[in-house]
Length: 160
Image 1 (cartoon, one colour):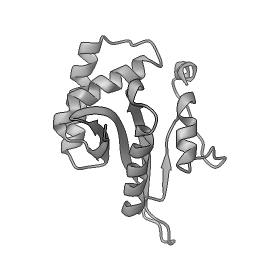
Image 2 (tube, one colour):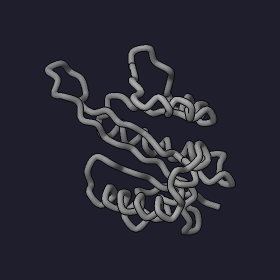
Image 3 (cartoon, rainbow, N blue to C red):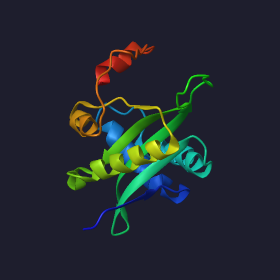
């Protein structure tokens, strides 16, 4: 099957919300039933995709079926008088249906990273799962010593 990568549109929101549930429910016990979550998430995703604002999402599609997705949030930096790009990006929710893994995630990452280069993004951050670290390393990501994180909800640390 041929995989094509395209920008997600609001009409994709329900399928993407179902993928989000499958992804996150596989990493921690859900606190919300699937139907309630999918309805809430579909609404949020449709709005984010329609706004042409800071959120962008790409989908991997095979024969009309979405098999994977990647979300990217653009983060404006404060204006800088030095010659430095004024955008960061945050990649999240990279998910490929298990049966389609083995290249689709790389295509999604290639697309998002090319978009970042074209948009003049300075740096891209993400929080990987244990199983995704090699994918991100192949795309130039590395553990850095110059970024810090404050986790305000200590219970989240168990799920990393």
